[in-house]
Length: 158
Image 1 (spheres, rainbow, N blue to C red):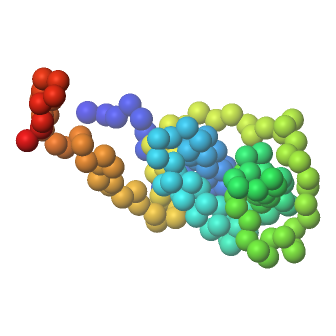
Image 2: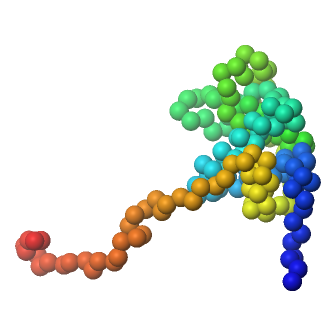
Image 3: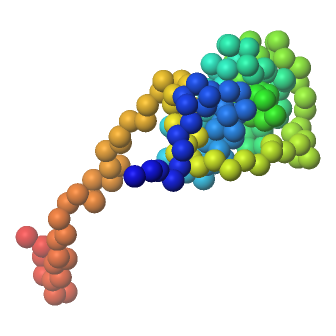
């Protein structure tokens, strides 16, 4: 029995083009994921490793479009292949990188067709990070259903 999807050789998957496409897909899905923590960690660790290996480079700082508790916040613009990404800055980035001002909305990443599972697989293979199974966050899901108790007006619950 043959599989519909051909699994590429692991070494062939880890080219800069494939890594940057996988980063793009993970980043795009992280923005709308119910629990984006793992996807952002995978993106950040992958970019950090790519920068250390010289396969990606920090271009400069941009003002963040969605600052948290302040009126201004900056993000580091990183170029990897034909794609650009933003990551949180380190203290040294403010001294070493030029500030590019406001984010230019005309620059867009190229589209790619890769599933989230394939993208996560490529980045997990590259970084060695594995996704941990998380216990259900809401304990009410595991409790059996209890009927509500209705008392007449003036009666006490015992």
